[in-house]
Image (cartoon, rainbow, N blue to C red; front, side, top):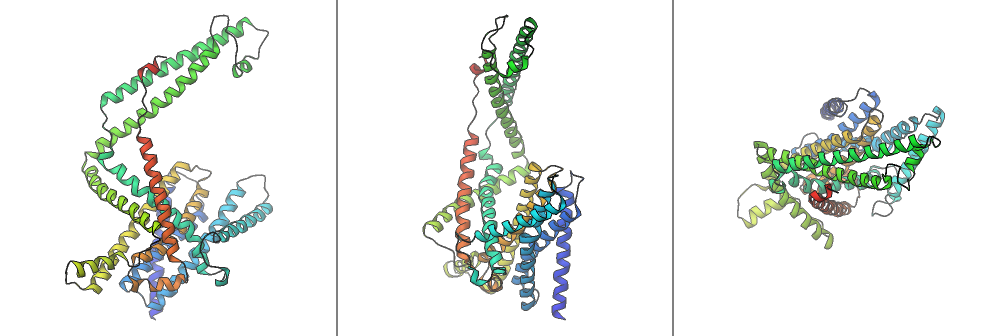
Length: 456
C-alpha cells in the first residue's frame, strides 16, 4: 500500500508538471503561431515533466518523502523514460519532420531515411565516448549508465556555456557601472548624421540613375542597359558623369550609413538602460549585479585552480560551511538539522534558477530563429536540449548535496566518472566566460564616425 501511495504522489506531480509544460508551450512559445502539432506538444510537455521529476526526486531525497525503495524505483523509471525520449522519440521525430518537409520524397523513402538518420545519430552518440573517459561496452550498451554518460557530455557542455555566458552577461546588463553615459545631444547628433548620409546616398544614386537613363536614351541600339549596370562602365557618360566613381562613393556611403545606424541604435539602447537604472527595479538589479560580479570572478578563479591542479571538491558547500561555522567560528548548532534544511533551500534555489534560466533562454532562442514553417522542428530541438540539460543537472547537482543524500543518485547512475564531468564543466565554463568578456569588451568600443567622413 505504501508503494502504491508513493506511485500516486509521483504520478499526480508528473501530471502537474506536464500541465505546466503544456501551458508554457501554448502561452509562451507558440503564442504568436497558429500552426501547432499535437504530437509536438505531447513530446515537449512529456520531456518537461520527466525532467522536472528528476529535481523533485532530489528534493524528496532530502526531506525524506516516499520510501527509499520507492524513490529508487522512480529514479530508474524516470531516467529510463527520459533517456528514451532524448535518444529515440525526439531524434526520430526531428529526422522525420526535416525529411518530410522535403516534398520530393515519397512516404516510403521518408521512413527509410528517417531510420537511417536515427542510426547515424545513435552511432555518433556512441562515438562521443571515445575521446572521453566514459564507460566501456563491458557495462552494457543499452543501460542507464551508458545513456547518461554520453548524454551528459552534451548536456554538461550546454550547461557550462550558458552558465559562463550568464555569469558574465548578467552583471554587465544589470550594473550601472557598465552603462555608458549618453546625452540627448549625442543621439540628436547621430540622427542628423544619419539623415545627412541618407540624403547624400539618395542624391548619388539619383545621379547614377539619370546618367544611365541619358546614356540609354542616346544609344538606343544598345538595349542591354542593365547588363551594363552590373558590369563596370569603364568610361564617363555623355553628361560627364564617372559612373565608376559614383558607384564607389555609394558603396562607401552605404558602409557609413550602416555604421552610423548601429551606433545610433546602441546609443538609444544605452539611453533606455539609463532610464531603467533609475527605477526601483533597476536599483535592485544593480545591487544583485554586484554580488554576481563577485561570484563570476570567484568562479573563474576557482575554475582555473581546479583545472591547473586537477582538483574536484570532496565536500558539498553546505557541509563545508557548517563545519567552518562550528570549528572555526565556535557556533553551537545542530549539524544534522541545519544540514538538511539548508541543503533543501540550496537545492530548491538551484532547481528554480535552472528551470527559469533555461526556459527564458529557450524562449529567446525560439523567437529569434523560428518561423511558421520551422517552429515545430525547433521546438523538438529545444526539447532535446532541455532533456539533456536537466539530465546533466542531476549529475552535477550531486556534488552540492551532502554525502548521505547523494547515495541513491550514485546507485542509480552507477559507476560513472563523476570527477570528469565536473572538470569538463570547469573547462567549458572558463572558455565561455572568457569569450563573453572579450566579446562584450569589443562591443563596447565606440564606433567613431567623424564629420569629415560624411563630407566626402
